[in-house]
Image 1 (tube, rainbow, N blue to C red):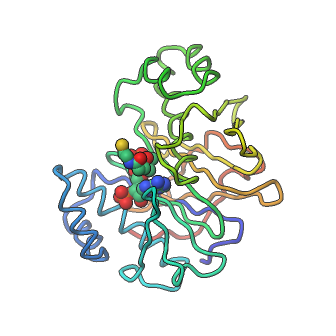
Image 2 (image 1 turned 60 degrees about the vertical axis):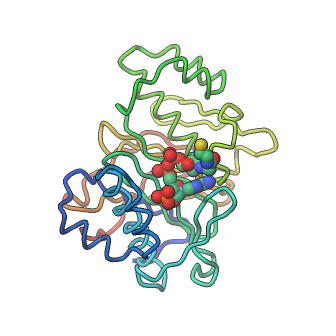
Length: 265
Ligand SMILES: CC(C)(COP(=O)(O)OP(=O)(O)OC[C@H]1O[C@@H](n2cnc3c(N)ncnc32)[C@H](O)[C@@H]1OP(=O)(O)O)[C@@H](O)C(=O)NCCC(=O)NCCS
């Protein structure tokens, strides 16, 4: 299934139930350098999520590009953002971004744009107003202050994943001040972006989804009103194809589209 010109393809995988043989098969497509990076993690669960994430990137790229999973090569820019080497990226160039959090990894792929993805656990830590005050924009802090206690963690993580997805798309990482731009939620599914100064809000599109009740996933993709993106989302692994709940998206992005067969487990 080729990648459509307007498509942002997202795959995610829950990792906690994977067994050693599944992990072994995934590790087989990693390079020597990637396996060395894996081996530097102290905890098994971090090694596991690293292997699943990097195998997922390689398998996804091979689904849309002309290179086999173990042969993809990557460049890393000054801020650490990896990209496919020019000679393998094709035209318009294949772009990707990956994210991992305990128990879930996700990868997004598109052509000829800037792309960022972030996944977070809703229960990952105690998230309080002190952290919000330190990182979020004033309007975001006001929005959080109006939340009922049981809704607070969800809204906090939704803002956080959107903000991380944007700085990962831009590529500057946490060097980018997180309070220089903001997201606002409107109605059932609306999402507004207040861009940093010098950036046009209409040049960016966003989607927020809940792969499961305890995770949030956000996508940021560059493209103006004449280039509306369509996100397709797929779960890989034993329960491939389980429905994903889109929560919010910004216009002109066209919400969540369907996609055919999965990558297998
Ligand atoms: C990029 C960054 C925001 C990622 O945050 P995170 O939520 O912890 O991690 P995620 O799982 O979502 O994303 C990590 C992946 O994004 C990619 N990535 C790394 N740097 C990136 C960047 N600057 N922009 C976009 N993507 C990046 C990598 O593929 C990485 O996975 P890998 O390490 O397994 O190869 C953060 O690490 C960062 O700001 N890095 C910039 C460098 C920096 O400031 N370092 C000082 C750290 S205090």
